[in-house]
Length: 270
Image 1 (tube, rainbow, N blue to C red):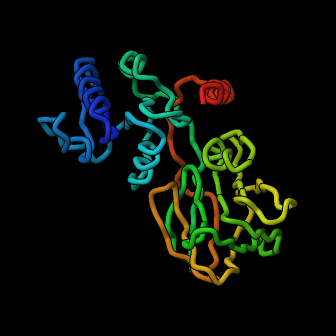
Image 2 (spheres, rainbow, N blue to C red):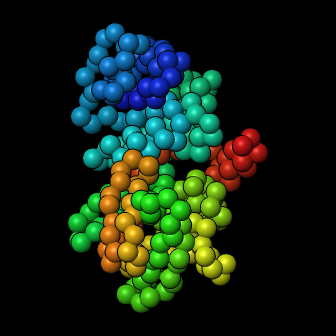
């Protein structure tokens, strides 16, 4: 198989591990290359051009590295993460087991589709989130007001420090810290979680992705829409963000790990 390796670049140990993993997988018969950002580091004296269509992307890093890699793909390719971060909800392999698992992996491996959330402003697609998008004021300590329209009908109005618009995958990330529920990633839904809402009656909403969802800004304060911590869009009063299920889900290699067992294991080690 053609395997593209991606490493977090702020850790020399992760870069060294990635290079050694590439050597081991090459000896196992796979065609190995490294993404441009990793290959520019001193740990990679020889650069192998990345294939246009790899069969598999292997990411050595934390959830942030995996989110950035998914964001950079114009067309989604199966991906698997090796945890080199703090918690690593998106990474299914630990470094000690990675080489053995990947060496045995053959073409036709099972893939799990993870829903992403698409965002549109004025009819223009502005990005997709695997975890979440955050709407937050650009001025500290200021509250925002949002209206949520479902199928064109006003369904809720939040006054809060911000609003998280999360996928089921992202329910174990920022949304969980903000008081949202843990959502089975097989559910096709969009989770709305207000941050520090003014009214205690303002609760998280889980809405079917088959519905039409729009978020309307009703504050005069400037705000930002931050997608997966990677992309920032400026928002103004009366701007409307249309939210829907992305046409391109993320593709994760099925490593045989039960989602709820994984959540239990990760949460007990926080």
